[in-house]
Image (cartoon, rainbow, N blue to C red; front, side, top):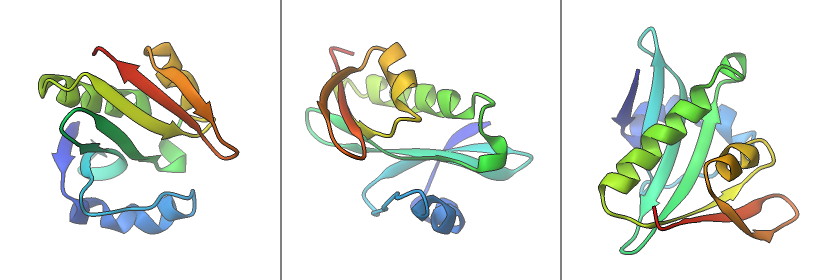
Length: 122
């Protein structure tokens, strides 16, 4: 099951996520993936007037390669689309880049540690 959660509800996963270079702030909105009432992954987004920025994607290592990230991202993108936002940006690692390119994102800049992409006209 996936549902919208608060910053505090995923806080216990922050130490593991920070080891993968994620940084957190209270302005990010989160969606979490639950298995047997336990959060096993989450993703976030920040909303602005004309765009959204994807933030803080994390799935516990033992649950990776099971399609959880794809489901979380689809859920998040549906929320963003339902709000009428037409532009989404993200800085992605090499792990998540293929999923976003397959979903229609375009690369706008490559950095040493990540790649910036944009979705337009959602």
